[in-house]
Image (tube, rainbow, N blue to C red; front, side):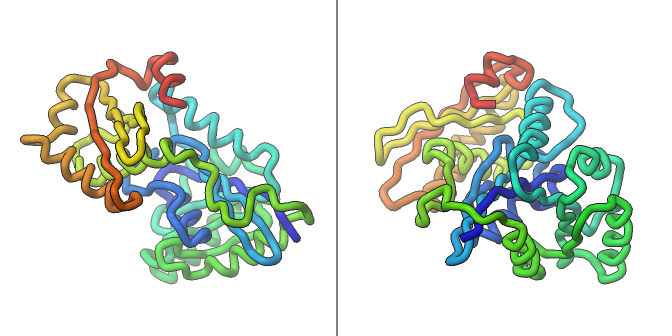
Length: 278
């Protein structure tokens, strides 16, 4: 039996969470087209007859403008410690930039570079990105599509081959160590990002405050009064749509209540960040 831990790092929106979900064959991290969708380290467990691999999905490393941003970066970089393999994910459709090199400079030399989104790039673009990534001087390079699964099996074989011999760290039926309440709050935030198209993603936080199954109460925190109406929607339309989408992903019979409150500038408030788990 081989077993170990894999940290997945990269800039925002390169497809880290989609890749982890693809490898595991189930959804353990929320996804959206908004930057910094992932705000916490999320662990997903791959169980195979010959191996157990624990993937640590991390927030996208970016140039922080708030205390929350600083803490997201710290959380991501800290994931490199005490893991057996590091995956550095870059976007095949975007030129390798200073942000990518900044992340790479904080990763070990034996990190695996994953060039993602090859389904959206031409063959010429993929080859150019692989050539540019070669300048990072890392140990291996894999072109993949987390969306379609192309190249993912080959990447996974390389990861498993690097795992040391060891015990199972989690029970074989376990897919993630994320608590249920945290997962539901994340589902609410994911669907808010999908429904609310205004520039609100960084201003929204979600927290389950009551759990008496099948009744779940979740608070949505925004930074200003003007944002509250946007999140509620005309006649409560946004909250209704979000609630419906979340219930579709929960066990039958679940009843979720959504409430919106204002936490002025919570992204810059250390006490608010601690209360929200950041």
